[in-house]
Image (tube, rainbow, N blue to C red; front, side, top):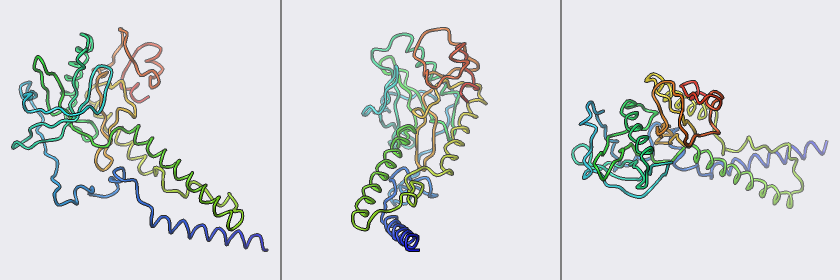
Length: 287
């Protein structure tokens, strides 16, 4: 009788302590913006809604004068391009924060062709809530770039890695706390404690939301007969309210593509037919 009674008492003490901690525990910061209808920024009286850009209809409308673009620090780097923060002159002369993708200065002719091909693909992609938007292009002799929508919270790969670190820290903190409590109150049965009680993990609803958003963006690409060829967590950006946006169309092609040339390929994410026959399609994107 005494042993079960002690076990129940210890468990009740643990639950009470955990409830007190949850009241004090801060949430993750910018990553938790999605579960409210409005972001933290939108509750700020100084916040202004994002400027809506009209989709260009002609080649001339896609062009942006280089004087309207200001390039800042580097925020990303690919096989042949750099991505920098920047600003551009938007509607009514307002400065708009953007991401600027440009060729490296030492790019070879093949890389220049890939860059121009990505520009053409982005024109065809147009606007979609789950795909990063291209506002326009600079095609001047000494300055060629794509002016893209700025997505503030980095890529999905680092977002998930950040959550893993948070979970590891929480587990370590809990173990330390339990060891200290055991030294004061005696041993506590480990069967009563589980990491499923922690709040440091993605819930099923959020995982389903992520999957649905990526599928939604990829369905749009399939409707345009575009094969992405490099779909991975590192190429999915996390925006306000955890809105995911597919990015990096440097390897994208129209229709079924058979790779004949040599070059860098994302081997870890390739489908069997891409590895065996160098064939890429919307089906290999699903893989």
